[in-house]
Amino acid sequence: MCVNIDVIDEQHKKLVSLINSFYDGLNNKKNSEKILEMIKGMKDYTIFHFSAEEKLLKQYGYPDYQNHHEAHQKFIESVKNFEERYRAGKFLLSLEVTNFIKDWIINHIMGTDKQYAAFLIKSGVNL
Image (cartoon, rainbow, N blue to C red; front, side, top):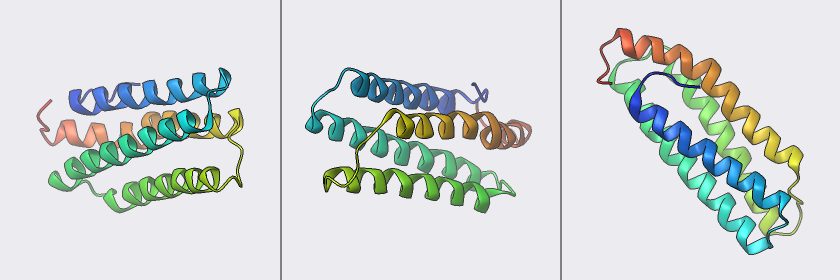
């Protein structure tokens, strides 16, 4: 799942690790407070990562920046919505939701991130 840009690859590894920890927490039936803590950690790190990624895309003039940014925003809104609904007791997290998050991240990395990576590397991004 590498895009061959070290800083982004390290962030992707951390993101996948957070998702795996969340998944394990659900499987091990962690309490609500711990689940909320993991959701917040995942959400906050995702926002940090997307911001770092978008900064590079802007810096190098990535032509599909707007679509990439919009995909990030939609994902963040989905995660925020999951968190709000869970906090309000109106939403039970399930493996289905976890799989949605995991699949989205993996597909995003393997799809759109691979596309920008080729552009950035060709543009001379500092690896």
